[in-house]
Image (cartoon, rainbow, N blue to C red):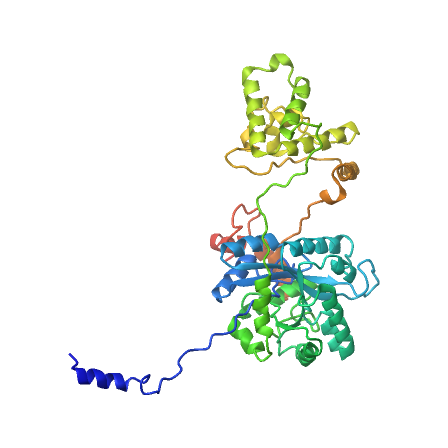
Amino acid sequence: MYNGREIINAAFRHPRLRGEQKNTVKCMPKKFVHLHTHSHYSLLDGLTKIDQLVSRVKELGMDSVALTDHGVLYGAVEFYKKAKKAGIKPILGVEAYVAPRDRFSKEPGERYYHLILLAENNTGWKNLIQLVTKAHLEGFYYKPRVDKDLLREHHEGLIALSACLGGEVGQALLEGNREKAERIAREYEALFGKGNYFLEIQKHPHIPDSEKIEAGLIALSKTTGIPLVATQDSHYVRSEDAEYHDVLLAVQTGNALSDRDRLSMKEDDFSILSPEAMEEKLGHISGAIEETAKIAERCNVELTLGKTLLPDFPKPKGKSANEYLRELIMERIDVKYPPETQTPAFKERLEYELSVIEKTGFADYFLIVQDLVNWAKLHGIAVGPGRGSAAGSIVSYILNITDIDPLMYNLLFERFLNPERVQMPDIDIDFSDRRRDEVLAYAREKYGEDRVARIITFGTMAARAAIRDAGRAMGLSYAFCDQIAKLIPFNPTQGMHEGWLTICLKQVPELR
């Protein structure tokens, strides 16, 4: 045990009381948020998958991240859902292509400029959708392009960054024309509004042009008062992924890795860096790191997902969708099922189907579909007999949507609509290729141009094609790559989450 004197002596020997306390607190890095990030939805350019992006950001201790794929919003909903689930704030954006004159001009060799657009709020998200849509439908020339007129029309709720070396400001600085760069920067600031446009600064020491414009960007910021914001322009997850990304770029351009003067980003690091690494790179530029967190704080978009949005089918005055659907059924029932065949079991089945449709709120959907099908048939346009689970519905058969009697073939309605698992009905309809545009024109006329759209599809690289393309880029013989590719089974029914190649490596010894 200590006596009183020993306790007092021990206390006075404590460095805090002797005035000798050392500062052992480690300085925390400034908060940094990635605002220029590409995923594999930047087709054949980004290597990062959405799951990898979210996991890496979380691993590095960051709480927000933006997704800015080239010209598209393909990954936005997947990114939003997975980031939210992981406790990461999703910032929805795009790296847009801006036409040098206007989006309708298609002069040979005409360039385009890059511009980062981030949705600050739901108005900004809607404007982002408008911009990307019109870029594809009106401005597509090698790339989906917007122009400044379109940006003025849809600038509300958006935050813009001047982008990488491919941005209009960056290109002017590379030309050595600082006056032009200042004029462009001020034009964009006026377009988006003060406080909504930023000069983007990156640090890629092994890319001479990047270093060449750094001083120009800093000087431009001081002259104009437009803040600088630090970004990384990430295309893959970790630094060691650079060689795989290089193969991907070679596949995109149709080159081999051995080709000189091909597009490559291997000279520098375009991975998802930690806040510490970003501070080391750009911490010397006052405010550039801190500005990323301020922008992230401002971006708050809330998407409403899982809610069915249906047009309101025009109905007789005073009638609800459910009432009018029943009325049509009663008018047409005898055509498909003569009175003598309408047994109690039949009536029970019909009432059950109608009750499920009412409960799930899909009456308008059936009214819309039957209207399109019957209009087409009335005008002599060939329509298929019906495919998939919709053929199991008596209601579909009576309304003339399908031509197959589900009772004759004992088809189950529950495969089509199930009150225990409510989801949008999926009715596959085949209209004649030759006259399909007439059906679309009728729909546009009835519901409005802005309520009718075609869905898109885009291809991802299948496993066999990936092997062949990667092998060609690596300079391996076609016969060798083809031999490997043929070891991969066709038609995978699993592996959507783990990856089909990963599963094949486990299951096919020869491939391994």
